[in-house]
Length: 269
Length: 269
Image (tube, each protein chain N blue to C red):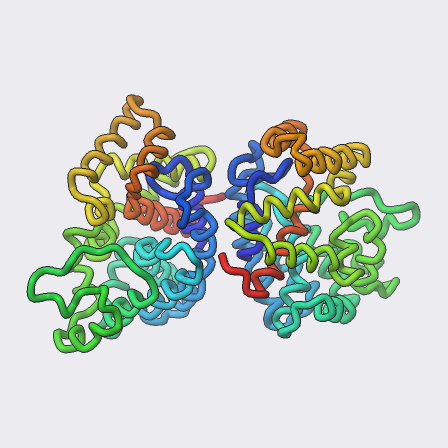
């Protein structure tokens, strides 16, 4: 949970809610309450409960505040890492093992989590309407008929969602980013802000693609590069993205995941 | 724990760490980590464990960050309220009952909490050196010889410490402030900032008296009044107090206590 709290406190974090920038209806305190609410689910993951069940519990807890969907993606990324850490193996292999063990029940729990909160997602491909995640628990029979495990569900989303891609490829960006955090110096909130910008400059944010379009996501990536090259001011970019309602949420989720791993590795606050 | 998180996120909060103002060695993230660390102790209080033991555990957890003493006073205020809430009676009477039931063991645990962290306190009166809280667990035999219960320890400190005064008078300022929070409108962090200023304007902050002197505490109170009367800018006062290292920490603790009660009463974030 500290990972989620530290993530939202990093500043500046162009386009996202941080300590100094918030939206009228989505404020800093909603993220605090969301992180605290998720705790029950993370504790469930620590006890060895199925990762889908822990995820659904965490999302349900997160949703008990008035800001709406604050940390769905971050919780999705962190839950298998918590489960791996509880087994004493918070490594790419340990996390991959957790993913490999997911079942059809986990997939059903995953869908159920969408009952608690509105998540911005793309329409499903033709013929896949019964598996639209927005159906939530109503998709249960379609999932069971096809015998989809949670790992399969992630596989199907990996192209358009960086968090799902992390799930099915051994969380490479998460662990790399954790290492970058551990090797950096200074105040944690500045280190996470630097990581956020570096990630944003490297790949397009899939949430921005879903929320807006690819052109916007490419623009954001290029502007983040300009910030890194000293050609743009990060605070001005932050203000502008908030004005235009462009929120690179997936990049923030990756930072939260990296923070969790780094804290597990002994990163001191 | 959410109460502690929301407290530190209120802004502006003249003289204290908030989302927009921090000290070189005492930063916002230290408060986040302190609040998360305190959780184990609060959970212990929920199970009906002795309130002194829960307090010591919370302080030990809080101290696992590099900012030093972040929330000692807030934890001292909130722990008996958590215990009262766990009994379904988070009222002045319920909290008074918790205090009345404290034992000599609770007093020993309270002293032990000072082993974990440096707390700014006054020198004890002549003849009371063996009961100096800074002796921590070494004071155990002196406490046991005198048969001091935790409520007695608070009684002795009530004159110079508003948190101890809350303990022995049924938490009047805490519950009043909770009601003020519940009746106010708008974003939580603005409501807590307004409460902070109102409390600061009403009585001297005992932490400022201890850390500096009575004249400084009176000046802070009067300047807070000037802010309320529109004669001073709260942001400028906040910057000045941070510059002068004047931190009205007891007032912040009272806000945390009020937040806990208000959240228990159903305050929505």
